Image 1: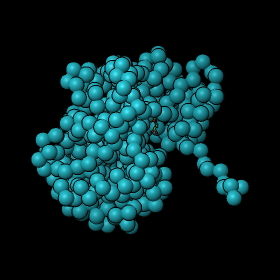
Image 2 (image 1 turned 30 degrees about the vertical axis):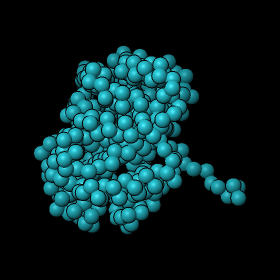
Image 3 (image 1 turned 45 degrees about the vertical axis):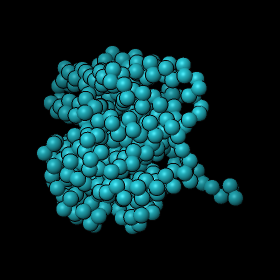
Image 4 (image 1 turned 135 degrees about the vertical axis):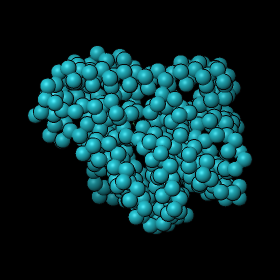
Length: 401
Ligand code: PLP
Ligand code: TYF
């Protein structure tokens, strides 16, 4: 009976936005959700997306038909688009399915279903900490997981030795979930040399790397550079899973556009894997929505629009870097306690991991109306330059509370 169903716990990230909405204080600030905002703290619609949307709507005959056709065109462009590894490697050596799934989350969930069915009992190793939804996704798919060390509170940096030791200690053939760039929630990425070492250990242990690529462009501002980690693994000829999202870098949050890329060792393997993924997708959502796929396909398939996108990406990432700097400067100017605030500048992407305790976070919210997740993460994408001073006051008050 429905009566027997218990209440589900609130989502730790989405719940923050609900609380923010209910607050009517004029200085309120939502640093909870990892979604890009303009300097006016409004959602940003990319110019390339506007252009392409006008074009798509002008072809009204395209609108609700030929789903399959566009669906495949999109795969083709996504592949060509030098997003995860080079098209050349892809075509010559790697055989992959670039299947359009339901944004990053749907791609992760589809991959989880594949693991549950065809690698039964295999563990997925996730970083500690990680994006809150990872555990949720693997639990839901009944895929066992365990954590590898990642964040070192002493240095507010990467616990690289711990990470390597834990990946080494995991049973052979485990899946290692890695954030392609701009690690959520810490804002700490391995260096290129550390990525090489991680790849060595994964290869030694016959693990399978599984990239979550939700923030391409937000680490360095450059789409190409941010693909370094995956390209490095692909260049070694390793099999890979990549769950890719265009939600953030194309500002298409609600279109739910993303792709699950699977790199196999042979075309025969790829065909079989593809057939199974299609079967899982068919039983889950049949086929993906097409509008976001059309937008992405048109942007990446047109060199002018592609370049324009890269410029807009740089602008978005640049705005975040500039509020980081302004926040840091405000903290240094106002705080004379000697606390080291440099982690704010060191962290990259949308997030910073502040190390605030739950009680301090409570002070941020109840006294200062600043909303953030309970793990101490802030999304700098939700900060404007006009509010840096205010946030600095809130931090100083809460840290020394
Ligand atoms: N992975 C990480 C690390 C994320 O932070 C997010 C979204 O915030 C996603 C995946 C999934 O994003 P979406 O499903 O909106 O594409
Ligand atoms: O980590 C986060 O903040 C994300 C937030 O379409 C999010 O979970 C989730 C979905 C989405 C936009 C932002």
